[in-house]
Image 1: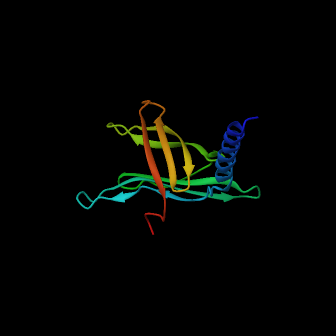
Image 2: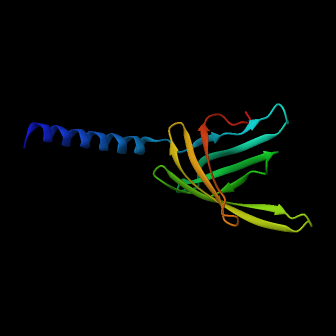
Image 3: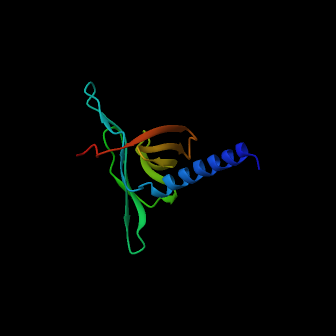
Length: 142
């Protein structure tokens, strides 16, 4: 083979192995948040996720909390985590104007990175979608 082709093949192999190595060494557990306080309105808005492991098989669990004006009650959810990909669903209780209770579910999927999670949500009833980034950092509550 010509030297240029060999060098190109070695470069591709190096880049691929480096990317795989980074993915394998990525720490999944941690706190990811974009919760923030608004001085003007006094509202708290955003989302916070704590990923931890538990049980004899050390499965992943998340504590999920979001806020729109005021923080909602945190939920413990079992996500699907495969390498650096995460998926989970969050059921939420809402009340109609006439006081009737109804549940809407939001499906989330995203990519876990060194500095945070790129997360996309979709409400299963309204089909509305949004994207957000949760930084890996201390909890808003600390």
